[in-house]
Length: 89
Image (cartoon, rainbow, N blue to C red; front, side, top):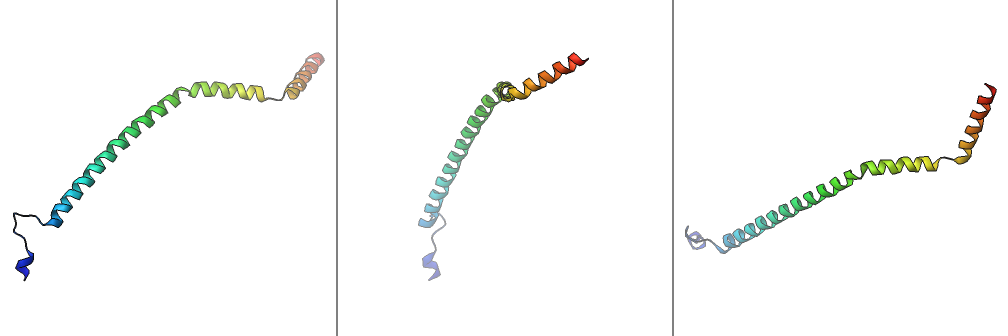
């Protein structure tokens, strides 16, 4: 009975054929995923490079914002105190 379940060594069983097809399909799919991840990585590197080019501009605008955000009343009070100190000296 055991001999009826065995297949000759030259032939592959249906299971082995389907397994090889599935393994080939999985390998192709993984290769496709790897290629797409590499494309995504290159795109992200490009985006980061463009973003880094704006670093100096961002710093300049931040300084401008900080200067403009200062309270004008406190600046006026500071100037009047400095003027009073200069007059006393």
